[in-house]
Image 1 (cartoon, rainbow, N blue to C red):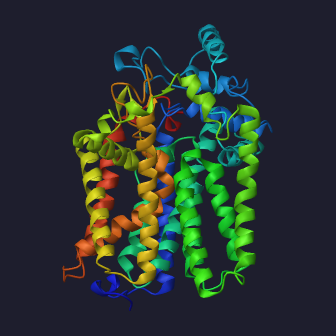
Image 2: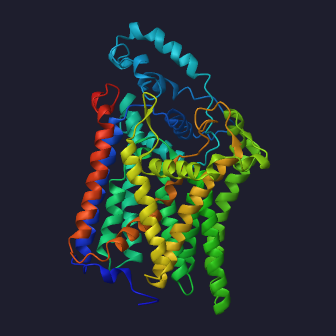
Image 3: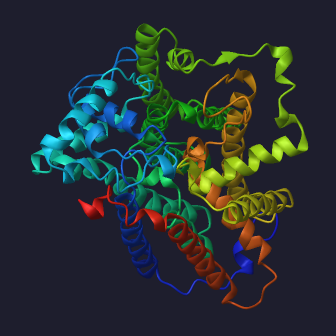
Length: 507
């Protein structure tokens, strides 16, 4: 034991063998697959988080076409958007009575054709403003689209086929959460089961949508684990350096909003290099560090060069900002932002944490969420992460555990600070979201890369809060209660969508 009392010592002893633990996690993976499938099937197309735009990019990549500008929606994607999309996400209920707008595929073609042609003509002029997004998710989704066609899927089933790709990403994230918890807390059964369990039932609606956010927890989760292993290694090997570099490259090539996670990873690497230099092992670790830099740097540089050449800036966001009609505020006006008031700061933090747990879907222009549930997620997140930080400061963990959890905490804080910074620097004018009236980037999906580190902190804080409880059943009962709360609240909130005539169950 190092520097204090190990958190595992306050827990009941692990009573499961390694094979039994693996069986539990495999069961959680199966439940995660069912969870994502059922809710992905319940949501009709296309949601308000630009799902049709992300779908168009997947189709373009399936054709071997990487956008070189903010192009129009492709001819192959447009019919799917027109035929299978419902307006219920963004139209008020009195503007879209379902009895007056039945699904087009249920209507005689001669009756519906003029309206479809009119809608298609409108969509032919829509610009894909996400065209500069990094390519990894869209490459995988494009290949999956091709495979669906080869398997004989078509029409609406082919659309859902591409959405069901998320099942594999979430299941892999569940297993990765178990790997992380087992590596950091090998004696703590509550954390080893709790992290994958919360991942399996995490009610984030991005997991039920065609969009690149779903890949971030897997990409950075792998990078997080590998970087901690690299920190622990006396002399890291080339294989570890190569895998770490590839995971960091995958994180970057998934989503531009993962940049703050990469910045924290860079600081961790500098810390490790300093430790190696002080111990005289830097030369021996040189091949591993070189392989990490090459495997991470070359893909990143290649994509940055691509976006600079075709879109005019290294991240490709300038064209999107211009399309959305945002403008930069003068530096002197940054400090007038309401985020610098206690109320404004809580508005930002609570809104961001609520959507981090539940997502941002609207239904008839209203958030698909419950204020009480939002408050529980926000308050518990601040509370348990706060307890975790206090425990880390008081050294209530081993040195290696503190190292990993501080890395995780830095990742979460950096992701939140980045979105706060974006909230401050732009004037959003007449944009729907964010807006001049509500100038906050409270899109929790943009920090999903930090999901596994966050859940480690969250459950570690809960574990420390329960450490004085002597009853061995308290922790499992609390975990089961959390899962039931997540699942029941999500089902109640989303239940209205299950009978929807536009979803998978009614095709």
